[in-house]
Image (cartoon, rainbow, N blue to C red; front, side, top):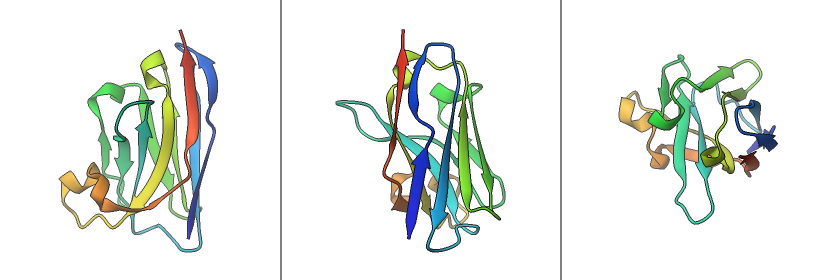
Length: 125
């Protein structure tokens, strides 16, 4: 079972990036899928997540700028990131887990069982 993230890169502030994550080895159609990030010297934090039925969660610092989407048939989850800021610089990880229906489980790291390897996003000022 594997989650493979891609799409990171170096962009100037104000630009956009689209991260993609594809799952293999099993279907994640019934799982909640999310994106986390970890900046140097900081703890890993939730960015956004989406349930199998389309319920979404966004951390406050990305509301209005980032959009999460998924394609259950393709076993993918994407993160469209607009108006990027230097503070968005981090390694971004995709993850999947069993939701259980509780809204708070959308953003709790303990929900997520499967983790991708991470993709670096660097935003220059």
